Amino acid sequence: MLYGILAAASALLLTAVLSAAVRVPALRLGVVERRRGRRVPLLGGLAVMAGVGAVAWVGEWSGVAPLGDEAGWLIVVGAGLGVLGLVGDVWRLPAVVGAAGVVVAAALVVPYRELGVLGGLMGIVWIALVVHGFKGMGRSDGVLGVVGAVTAFALSGCAAAEVMDGLATLFSVLAAALTGFLMHNWPPARVVLGTCGALFVGFVLAGGVLHVYAVGYGAGVGAPFALTALATADAVLVLVSRKRAGRELWRGGPDHLAHRLRRIGLTPPGVVIVLGVCAAGSTGVGLAIHMLWTEPHFAWWVAGATGVVVLGMLFVPVGPPRGALTSAQASGHATRTATRSIPAAARPVSTGVHRAPAVRPIPGGRAPSVSSRPQRLRRQEAAELGRRGWVG
Image (cartoon, rainbow, N blue to C red; front, side, top):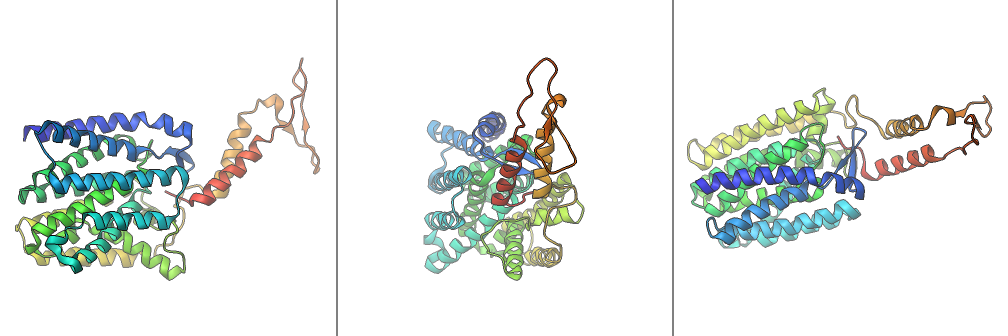
């Protein structure tokens, strides 16, 4: 008990410090994405992985809290998937490579001995769906941090009830690490998880749910569904909406649950609070079912609420929320910002005709040449936004 408290506190503080430390290198190396007209570093996932991995390794190395086979293999495979996501953050890997990586990683951690071959195959599909749901939440400030922390905390209780001490410790450490990360990820975020952190967090949570379910499967599938209902809703919403619109399923866009909540008028902190409350409710039901505090049929209430949310959000238009910058607006904003940085005496003077702009000379010096930096910035911003798509 004492080590669990110490491990959680260490993970929280270490992740908070690492999240602050990765901001400057990410900005200098250009590992960023644009959110509402701001350049936000993408290396937050590396900080979360390092914080969780360091605390878990100390517990294993010291022998005070050994992870065991399930938790140890889960964090190793999750870290490998996170490294693949980090490569994607830096070099923009094709979406099919990331999807294949999730499927392979899921195949490596599914407990075939308890679930059988058919159950294992279904488990692989389920993990892939849930991981992509959690990944979609990472596209909005603070959402994945809050939902992931709540889910990890509930999973820690489920694992402790099954005397799976290694998994219980891992989930408590992950919940604490995400809480420390939220110090820098709360809207407006100063650092985000990126594909690296989203894949790591989503995979550890989805794989952990499947391992806990394999031991306590007597409670039915209601508990694992309720524990991941929000991620499942986001994944189903995106798949259905893109299929209806005739879009490629793997192409990103502002069509996730958090983006649609922004479209109906919620502020970024409001989106985080609403989704956090929903996650607390659904994971609470999952925990209660797993602990046999309530009947398994209560999961149908969660399923019904999830279906209503998905159907309702399908009618919300997709696009930037009110107040967000479109690609053209962002380009114009960058151009105006660059122009304002030029001294007033050196700015071009309009002649009213389509000719090369005249330059007002600086008193006592030679006239500077007209810089093409604003045009260059405009092209770079348009290319960046076109490549990434709008993210909220």
